[in-house]
Length: 410
Ligand SMILES: *Cc1c(COP(=O)(O)O)cnc(C)c1O
Image (tube, rainbow, N blue to C red; front, side, top):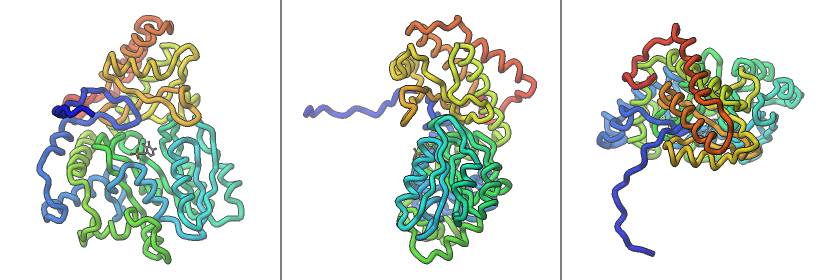
């Protein structure tokens, strides 16, 4: 072991075009560098209330129970599933990728619970008829699914699954980690009983928190539980005493992360949700047009099923998935993601989430990607990707209003 002094922390400047973490607005970094204040300090508890007000606006809900869980997005899955389930309950989980699989695995760990998996292959949405068939004759507590399945780039229509859950008289539990603030979502109108997200995706806040919101039906279920939630940390009732009126200690929250989230939410609301969603849509359209013009194939064949925040691209047979990604990082400081599970080595995933979803980034990525592909003898007509993206932006120019948040988001 060498005993050299460890130098000052100097991370490289990377452009993160992954399914999270996304790049953050400089305002968010500044907020995180402000002084720590005690988590029971009246100034801090008042500030928590502001965060909750903003979160309700982004989730589009009046739900009392709305707060950021002190855990990554996966902690949101744990809290949602474990608080809703009690012994002898049966739930249905729609499994069409890595994260919906995770929801099923978490539910299966709850004692005395029956979990029915209704599956679809990566790249596809779950068939509602499969849910109906699986539920036949059973009392279903909830139907759980991912809105945006980050592992495959698939988005599912929440209204469709709300309809099925209504037929079954079941709750609807939605993982919106990859979609909140990047894709249209309306918790109250779409009657989502439990909806949770992650901070490091389209919200472009620091990683490490999972905003969650819970409707009145679930609040009642939690109140009437006969057995304690099988997790102390994720038991929502005592945490809500801290995020509710009482402000009584449960655990020390990640104060600096909450500062960052507060500022990120301010960015979202200043820009306006509708404008932000449209920005995400335009940038993905340009990205897809560019990739297709380069001769690449989208993994999700039906455009209506594509998740706007994450685009999955098939790796051509002649190319090595990892080599291309590594060169993009080394030569251009651009990070994109691989596939995992059954699509490992078969797809790249390009995230355009939150602050990362900008015209500059789309055009830079397409140009850099072309250079790297050409280095590996994949024939791309020169400038094809950037050209197609530019044409997409020109077509959308009529609806393209300048955005309010800093001049830097395009
Ligand atoms: C990223 C992601 C998660 C997990 O979030 P972590 O912060 O990595 O724990 C869960 N679900 C979806 C849909 C995601 O995209």
